[in-house]
Image 1 (cartoon, rainbow, N blue to C red):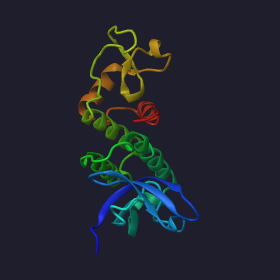
Image 2 (cartoon, rainbow, N blue to C red):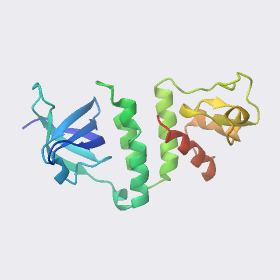
Image 3 (cartoon, helix red, strand yellow):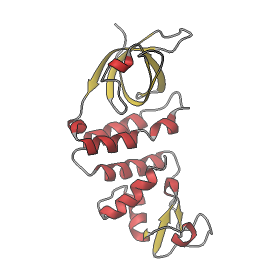
Length: 209
């Protein structure tokens, strides 16, 4: 019996006949696997957390998934929560697809989010997860100067992709209170943000990690 691995499915695409190719994030790597008759298996779906074994290591062909089992969460039958989960986890494929060996940060981040998904507003979980990711990757901009014009940002702030700060006028976009955003950057919590402010941040995350 092979080693059992846990992983989140970041993408699934059809191969020949009813076979599938899946990109899976485990605690140690992001890897592409082949699954014979994968289209027939309801387990092999975007965003699912699975236990699996691998066969065909070392061959010239893709390694194959076998002995799949699904690790379920109570919110999976809530269509709105499931859609938000799919929209969130889809952002990880382009971000991680060229990575090979990684540490457990990304798997742990998704697992922590999944465990809270039915207990909190998922959009808040996405924003808090993303700010944690930016800090981990060294991409969090604490600077209070506009990325575009380089002048100091005063009472109101706008954010570019990756939560990069700018003046609302420089971005031609709506704004958030600067103090609230800087507090969010510091605490990594959305508790003091209104729902419409969380929506603003969430839409930025959906543009890409």
